[in-house]
Amino acid sequence: MAKILNDVEIKRLIGTSIIDGDSESIRPNSYVLRLGSEGEFLNAEKSFELGQSKRGIRIPPGNSVAVTSIEKIDFRQETVEKIFPGCALHALITPTTDLSREGIIAPATQIDAGYFGTPNWTINNTSANERRFLYRERLFRLTILKLEKDEVPLKYYEGDYQGQTGYVRSQRKGAPIGIRECEWENSLVEGGPEALLENLLKSGYPWHLLGQQLKHVGDQLKIVTDEYAFIDDSLVSLRVKVDNLSRNYSDLNQSIPEKISSSLNIQAVSLQNRWLLATGSMLLAWSGLAVTVFSNQNAQGFLKANGPWIGLIMILFGTFVTIVTTRKGRDK
Image 1 (cartoon, rainbow, N blue to C red):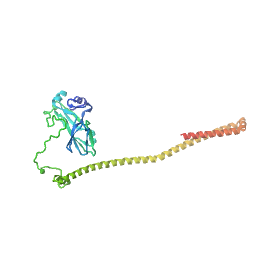
Image 2: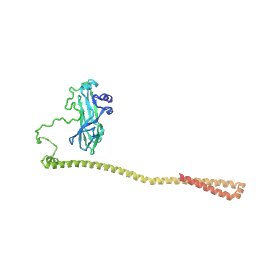
Image 3: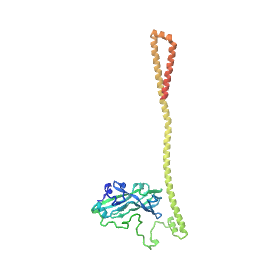
Image 4: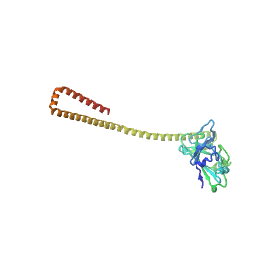
């Protein structure tokens, strides 16, 4: 049964079956291909080359780009036999999850046993925003399958792309010349706006120019509509966040007076308790002093002789105790 290669086995392929590979791209059960230097913007039929003056590509919404990898793949029988005797290699190319999260669609493709060359594939920007990718950025996951002896194909790959490196345009044979227009089936509804526009584009000068302008306006209107939908969704999300923030702020305003009132009540009760304790202590001290004086004749004589001074001292002492108690209450 075919087996998916792990990181140890993939490392053996660097420099042999994965030419110009990088060990930093090895994952537990895959290798991540890096964006190559050559490709083509399919919507504009414009080729590009990165690595010199250009550091990356920008893909507008709704556009498709054909890209390549830095790595070249060598799954030829004589190469694989040196690493895995009696076996063959087959691989799947799929986009990383980062791309799908950004609205980039890249159909999965595969590399047949026996293939030698640079992988080419296409990515499509289905999001409402421009996407940018740097040269040598890791973008596509290469999952390699090892085919055992009973799974090795009878005939290895010998297609149109064998041995070709860099970006290679489609080698599909087009339709033969001479097929009449009425023999083609399409999605246009007779009498519909798309059909009318198509007929206008096929008309001679100057009507085809008008058709081209209408088509351009229609494309721009679609982009504006998509952007408006994105802005509307963003405003709805922002409105929800503002409502939640206002609700939390309202709850906070309602709780502040309650907290202040509770704190004042606690401080008042504490102050009241301190005054009661101080007053009780002073009354108890006065009572003890009165009992002592009136039960002893010598104490009575001393009190009569020095009454004014003793009264003044007691007044000062009481004032001192009051001041100390008040300051402690303020400090708390």
